[in-house]
Image 1: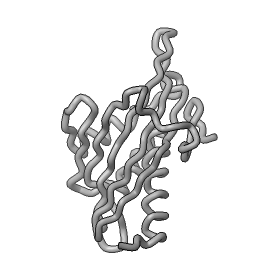
Image 2: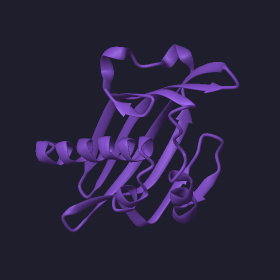
Image 3: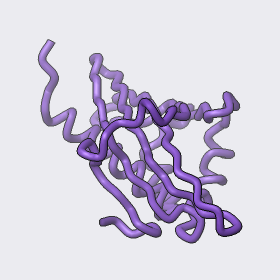
Length: 148
């Protein structure tokens, strides 16, 4: 099956927008790419509805706490009107002077609605250090909330 490169480019741009929306706490832009039935499944296994998710989104990224953030190892698979967009985020968090490094991978499920792709599900999973994708797979990175 041949995948339309324009569709992959569109989904890649949406993935970058998704990350940028988080880093900039941009609820309006993020709301526009979510399906009305959206939900998220966080690393601890808790299911979060769209309203609660967007409420968190407004303040979820603090550049004084999350001093480094990148998106890497992006994978996009398209199955008709459904797409799986996955990647990993490496991060550095500083709390009480203690620096913690970590990585989380995610799979976002998009469905095509008319001409638009909307995210209907986001699922996060912690990544063990031995499974970290290499730095040469970085797509975008932010230092203290600023795109590099």
